[in-house]
View (spheres, rainbow, N blue to C red):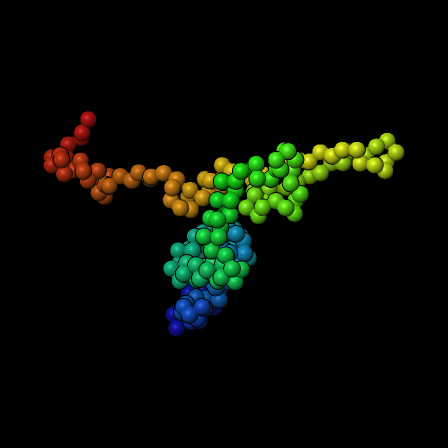
Length: 196
C-alpha cells in the first residue's frame, strides 16, 4: 500500500455509504474534525494531531487531497440524511422568514394572537416574545402587560435564499487567454495591439 509523507501512517481503504476511500487515519480524523469544527481547517488540523505551529499549512495540504474532499462531502451528506434535512428544507425556512407578514400574528383588533394559535409559517419568523406584566401596588393583580416581539432578519434571509437559488445577480467573468488578453479583443484585433 502507498504511504503518506509521514512514514508511520499508511493509507487504508474503507467504504462509507457505498463509496470507497483511501485515506490515512489522520486524514480521516481531519475530515471528521473539519465538520465538527464548522469547516475551520486550522482547528481541524490541531484536533487531528497536526502541529499547532503549522496548522494553517497542514489544513491547506490535507484539504487539497481529492479523497479527503470526497470524504468530507460524504460526511456532510450523511449528516443531512441522519437529521432529515435538505437544501430544500433550508430554503423553505428562509422563505418563511423572507416572505413573512407581521399581520398574521395579530387579530382583527390589533392584539397579539395567543402564542399557541400563531400559524406555523408566521411563528417561524419569530425569534422571541417577551412579556412584561405590570402588577398593582399590592402585588397580587396584573393591571397590564407589554409584549415585545423580535423577528428574524428578513433581508438576511432573502439574501441567503437568493444565493441558494442563484438569484443574487450575475457574476461577470472575463474570457481571457493565459496572457490576460480578452479573447474577444484578440479575435477583433489580430495584431494584438492595445485597444483604447
